[in-house]
Image 1 (tube, rainbow, N blue to C red):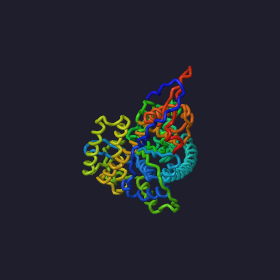
Image 2: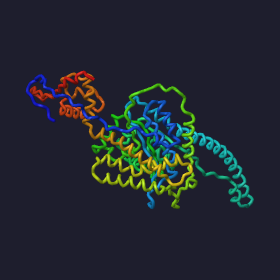
Image 3: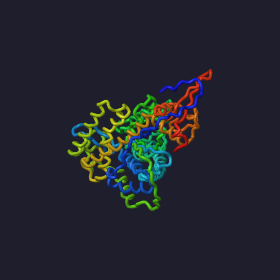
Image 4: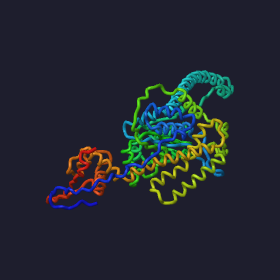
Length: 506
C-alpha cells in the first residue's frame, strides 16, 4: 500500500478505525503423545521432561535421532512387499525455541547413552593401541634377530627365505569406533566415515552456525556431501591434494541440534527466495519440532529415575551390536548389501494406504513447493521410524509390525504440523514482522511519528530494513499506523503515526 501524499506536516486525524486483532502468528501444533515413543524409552524421556520442565518433544527428538545414529547402516527396511527399495533408518532432527527454554540440556541428556558408547570405544581403542605397540616392540626385536639368521643362512648357502618366513608381520590398522562429533571439516568427516561405515552423528548446540557455514563460497562440495550422506545408502569418494583419495564405502551422517526461531526464519526465507539454501538441505531435518513455550513452571528437585534410565540405556547398548541374522534379516548376497527387514502383511497395507494419500497430496499442486519438498521426504521417514520403533520394542526381531507402522504414521502427522508452523513463519514473513513490530509499539519503545529507519536501527528480531518495511505496510493496511509524506524540497520523507490504542499499551 503506498503512502498518502501531503505537502505539509499535518497532525493525524482522530478518525482511527477500531482495531482488529492481527491473525495468529503461528499455526497450532499438537503436543507429543507419549504413546508414540518406544515402550522402553518412554519413562526415561518423561522423567527428563518433568525434571527440566521442558516440552517432552525436546528430549524425545534427541532420543530418536540418537537411536538412529546407533543403528545406522547395521540394518535397513524394505517397506514394499516385492520391491528392492531399501531405507536406512538415518534421520536428522532439530528443536526450535527461543533462548532460555532449555534446549541444550534437553538434548544433552538423551545423548548421554551415545556419549557413553563413545567413551567405551575410546577406552577399548586405547587398550588395543597399547597392546599393539607392545607387540610391535617384540616384532622389532624378532626382525633384528631374523636379519642375523638370514645373513648366516646366506653365508652357509642355505635358503634365507625359510628364515624370513618365520618373521611375524602385522599389517592390521586399528580404527576407533566413533558415534558422535561436533564440528568436523567435511574432509575429516570423510575420514571418520571411511573408518566407521555404520555412520556417525553430528551434534551442534546451535544449528544456525552449521547451516551458515555451508552457505559460504567454496563449501559447495560440503553441501553436496551432506545431501548425499543423508540417505545413508551410498558411498562417496574424495580426491584431495595432500589427503589423497578417501574412499568412503558408506556415507551416512545424522544431524541433531537446536535453533532459535528468528535465525531459522531468516535462513529459511533466504532458501525460499532462491538463495544458497534452496537445495533441500533444510527439508532433511525431518524430526523438527517447534512447540509452544511452557506457560507454567514448578520446581522438580529430585534424583533421576534410575530404573527408567537403566532400561533406556540398555536399548542403546543392545542396538549397538545388531546381529541381523538373529533378527530374521534378509540379504541379497552382494558384499555391500545392507541386511534388511520386511514389513508384516498388515504393516504393508497400512503403509500402502498412507503413502497413497501422501502421493495424491504431492501431486495435487495444493502445497507450497517448500512444503511439498519437505513432505516428499516422508516416504523414507515413515519406514525409518517404523524400523526404529520395532527394533527398540521387539528384541526378537522379525517383520516390522503393524503397531510400529501405525505409530510411525502418527509421528508423521505430528511432525507435519510442526513443519507447517516452520514454513508459515517464513512464508508469511510480513505478518510475523508486523506482530513483532506491534509488540514494540505497545511497549512504547518507538516514539511517533517515526521513520522506518527508527525501527530497523534497533536490530530487533525480524525487523531488518526489509522486515520493517513489510511490517509497516501490513500494519497500515490493518489501520494500526498511518503514513505521511513530507515534501521538503529534496527527497520526500515518510513518517508514521500510531493508532492511539497502541501507544504504550502492552
